[in-house]
Length: 325
Image (cartoon, rainbow, N blue to C red; front, side, top):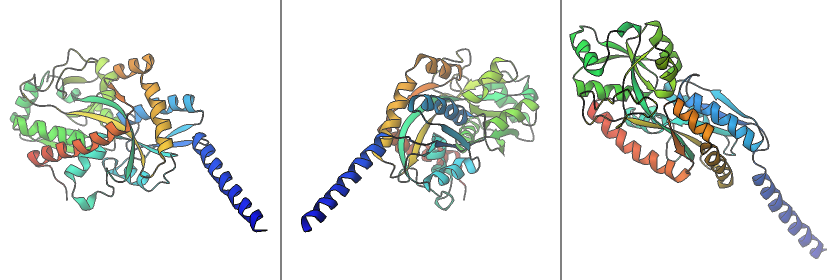
């Protein structure tokens, strides 16, 4: 009888181990929820939908994008932080949500730890921001004219804010130029673009993916890009540094993370699939059309980027005097 019990226990253990292995190998075996912290139309939303479609083709199950905008992506980050760490809730988030928010908000305002609460999966894209104007400033052709106008105005120019990182970029520019902006908050780049084209605001520093089509169509005007060098997608648009503010440089990235504790096998499955997707010529072409550089499907690189950028943005926010209690 004792021998039989030992055998039964051993068999049960073996079955459990095999079942676990099968479950890990079978990921995903149901739809995956991909959360985005902004309204439709911005970089994170565009990337999430593009890559969700590709992941669905490659891994065989639906990857469903869900927008949870608000509080500079903190609502979405907090939601994913508390999700079950099984690989079926993922977050596509910009460097702002993970590295700028901790730099500009008081600790009691941040409901998540960008290092401890998430499992890095892949760095999806790198991109510049674009200093963009609409109909209200149709006669402003470059950064020098923008600064001149801002200094002449008794009331600050209105700047549409889609994320904390875009606001920080605007504050760094304003500090360097000796001007100020009236910051108008929005829940994503899409609504900012709509109001910019409609003449409700003067300008916006926005992600390239959100404005590329409107700039090319002549509905918006790109004054400068915030990267250290010109964008390959916008080669005729100078950098802010070229435009009279030497040393100015703000480049951002978007990444995919999961709740802390997500199995390594799941992370590796997603990492491998994304690595293959990001190397496809048609994906690279699409990225170029959006003014973005293809990222790297490397979880350790993303983890290192998060830690490095928190230090970088904390210093920048302190210099710009940007802090919220």
